[in-house]
Figure 1: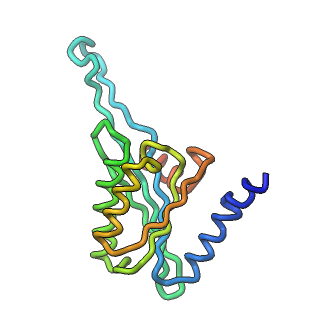
Figure 2 (figure 1 turned 135 degrees about the vertical axis):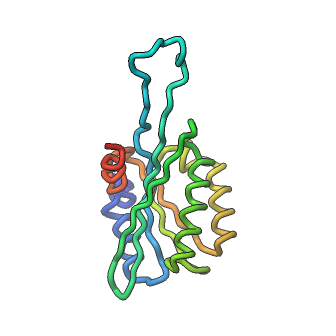
Figure 3 (figure 1 turned 90 degrees about the horizontal axis):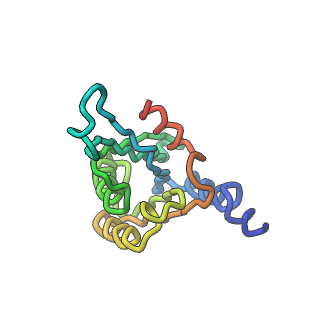
Length: 167
């Protein structure tokens, strides 16, 4: 029980949030995939489209950062028609996002990204993703500090915003 208390959002999560608020060179991101959108064909012969339905994947990422002692938040949604929701797709989304944050002056070399994700092994916890994260950190000259949450899906702001985007 004490492990649950220490590692929970109220324990470890609160310490990370406090750490973020006390530093101007940190960004805090939360990322998660929304439930996949499937597009089914209506009023057509099934044999023409059997096994060929289209789908859309949405990975949402909230990005918080401090400007003049004020906490600002942006929401980034990454849309993909690829069938994969794995570490390679997440890596491609993070490349685009980090480039945008650099161009906007939100992050610079030496900054730290405190990132929170759910415990999905294929998307955020695999060895491939750890390797790809190292590549991103080296390329952009930042530190990526990742916290993997255990509770599962549907527990944070990104899930709520993804649901709005999906609707």
